[in-house]
Image (cartoon, rainbow, N blue to C red):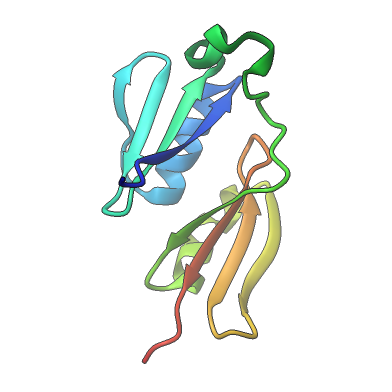
Length: 124
């Protein structure tokens, strides 16, 4: 079994896709008008409108209600990425900081309130 993706369900597909295009600095792959994907070697970040889960009825994910997941991306230089993005981030939770275990991290929220962590591991 291989990990494939994490999918965020949103009420604002275009806004969330634009946000992640900015953060990840790559265009989304758009196989359908209600779905977008950002593929990496490890898996994908998928973003779908509520139409992609409508068949689940009352068991469908609720956009903007995540309170337990952090989306994490390894970057070469946390400070440089933060400087590139800072003016366009609405909710910075943690400015670039070296964590007790050595990672350098910055955390912020996407437009739907999901936490995003850009981090780099210590050299060596």
